Length: 398
Image (cartoon, rainbow, N blue to C red; front, side, top):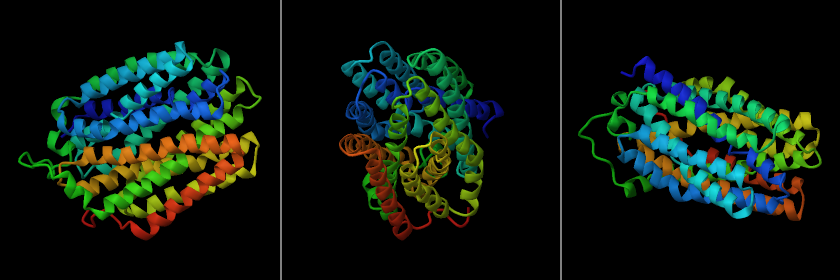
């Protein structure tokens, strides 16, 4: 049984890791726009990071399945992400930024499967629903804290200061990681083996590909992230027009609204996923995305645009908690939990990276309204496919 020290360490690891990742997320678009990068160039930079993530997600999942030293893997990824942030701060020109984004994208692919594996290895399937909700709560609380801090840094100091702040946050992140006792992580449970039994052998990966439910869920997840990934960066660019340093405060408010919503709902989502099942919650999470895209087209008032981010928080919170529960359901007893989550993250990365460059090009040649309506249409297709083809994955005995 996991000790209080390890569980608290996992809580605060999620918090500080979110702080580190926030500084190299949506703020990058505004930072680059301040150096006169156009929409297509910003989209290219974000796409390079996405491609690096695509190339490393499945290998990262396989590595997490194979390695016992999951904490060392997370520490190495944090170090690489910090280097990428510093390169972006010191060299805001094309090739250094593209290189940094590739490093950031590659290192970030480790965090998802590693944190999920550590969590499952500590609490097992029985406690995984609520643990995922708790992970997401601390992760989002970290995002809120980081967004406020980075908005203030961008406004009162400089946009570049955000990336130095990221480097400083790497220190408490590593300290919280060290609180988790490695001997308390059940290695076989962490990879989704037969409920933690030591004699479990991993299932063949081709066997997983035959599972129609996994393929349907992957397609739905790709469509969801294709529709979702570009919305906040595009909103940030739209808010940045003619507003100078104030744009950082607006983006900070958007991120805070999203993450505060997730913080307040994630624990409830984890609880309801165990009571209601996975599909009803997923339909809610997917359903708010096309609505959000349409609402962006109906107003240019900054206050209303920020308020719409509540829908982003609902959708992202549900997907962040429930998606891993679905994968755990479908890979139970196979020993392939992390490589499967990595493979699905690869598909998600494809959707997200294409979203950045395609939506950026549409906005560049047409308008922000057309770009948001295009993304809303893709989101509606994801809702329809999820509702018609994906069955409930939670076992009734749970």
